[in-house]
Length: 115
Length: 115
Length: 115
Image 1 (cartoon, one colour):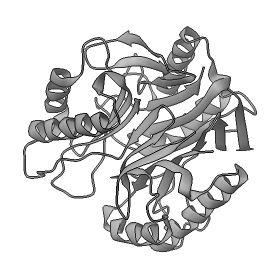
Image 2 (cartoon, chains in turn cyan, purple, blue):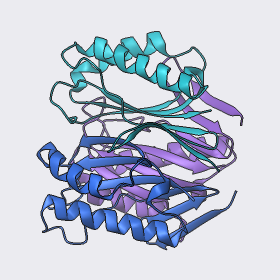
Image 3 (cartoon, one colour):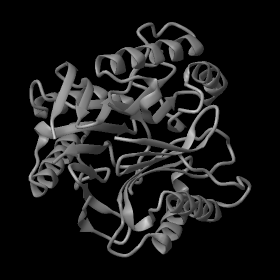
Image 4 (cartoon, one colour):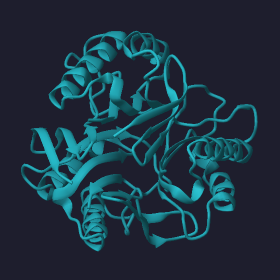
């Protein structure tokens, strides 16, 4: 099965496609000074953009693992998430508390999707 | 490849099947007031039930990611896990410490399995 | 699709292959008294060894989830990782802070790879 990599850096690729399965790197906000809800929306927009490059979209997300440095942001996460996720086609999801690579980041989302 | 979703809510699906691969949402106990061992057993019973709906079972689990809010519950996790996991057919597994969505939850388990 | 398990213990298998996809257990250092950089190098060597048993190698890693008990070790992780990961073929990656099963462990890496 073929492997395709997108936005390949020295440390990670933002997206790797293996056959019919798409793996995204953990996505964080471009503007880490924004509040939690805004960071979630930024991350979800990045996911949309990456999946579009693969010819996929958010209706084909299989699994999402969400890391929040503070579970106090769980309501803000869910508000932005529920406004974004397509009715009837939401993925399996797990959300846990974990600090991230830089202290300003308020959310990181790791996605597995179908092509 | 087909995508099938089970127990679809507004935020997540409890199970998503993509071709031959099954992704479960992070499973937590129905009774979060129970002790750690009991919560692990509840979670494992939910995994059994979900996999059965997919026509699969615990002998086909590929990978398990386990989140414990307190690593002091690692022995209780392992006792319940080892009593449940089929000899010779246990999955790849990673266990890390992470707080969960509600403070009473003592374990969350995320599963990838084969159909 | 076939399932093959390698290094099967009572609790986990170190590697499970499902069709063309390889799932590794979370890898930790053999010598948990070593410093962070050394533990990362030990873990990466174990990943090389496991993938070789599957007839795969580090150019075929799809996704890496990295858990660090202290994000202060992020620079040491990245130095060892960037020296190891093949140019142009690095995986999707997420790195979060999480305590591990034993207090001396300074890194755990969970890998999904292609056969």
